[in-house]
Image 1 (tube, rainbow, N blue to C red):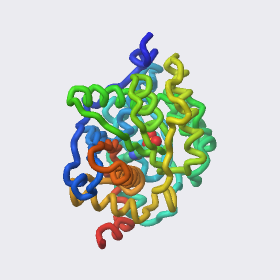
Image 2: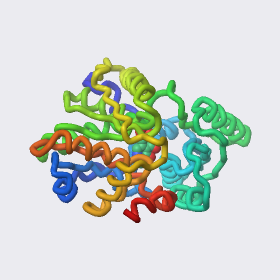
Image 3: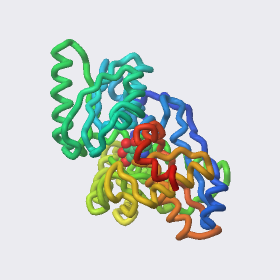
Length: 342
Ligand SMILES: Cc1ncc(COP(=O)(O)O)c(C=O)c1O
């Protein structure tokens, strides 16, 4: 068995042509006057506005298909990219999608509630359910299971994508695949990266990517920039995530705890809320590279990539993993006024 164990035998509903683009951000590098900044453009998957959740859903939906499911159940924030893309997979593969909207962000108004990802998932035909809390992962899963029971009674075959840890981390496999793909791209281009900047939310992207790199012999540092919870909670979550991936693949965990590097500097004041560094990163990405960064995830990770580029200085290279989220800019239009006015 190779370093990725059972990885290539895992069921996968492959919907994204690989590889995604790897590109230098020359204008941003010049403006920052630090390390070269490169982007891996996972925002540019062709499926329904793309983003990191495409790679993750390939493994969840692959498992759902292997079980003969006809309905996907998923939960997330009102403006969830994961839920939007679950609706896209369901539409493309002839399944139904039931999605639960959690109240994670104290934001009202027609843009947040009806535009952006919500509009797109309704276009894609998802059925929406609401859930009053945003910080109860186990409760959210139990509620999904209750909807699944109702669907079973009605003769459907549901597949639940759980939110809380403790379930096989199938989504993380998408980022093991991304690490493998990227290492091949870097080798083909004879390009060396000194530091990777990734967002760290559920941990599927960060955990899978770090695991894939280390399993394949790449020791380059990876910093996960927090988008959802502080570093004190995120670090143990990531360590556990890496152990779960190892267990799923039947290999030893190649990620020592000291390699799980978390930075929560750009999280404040909290999930889905802007801060001055994130506003500056969104503005710089748009005005110098025409990169659309969202206020919840990719804007915060770009703030982190810019910080790393300044710290490392000229002669080094930082790779920013662009995980997408672009439809959210429509929903966060009011909050983005500060970026527009600056
Ligand atoms: C655009 C985008 N980037 C990053 C993340 C964070 O990824 P993960 O949940 O795998 O940590 C998400 C999560 O929803 C996302 O939608």
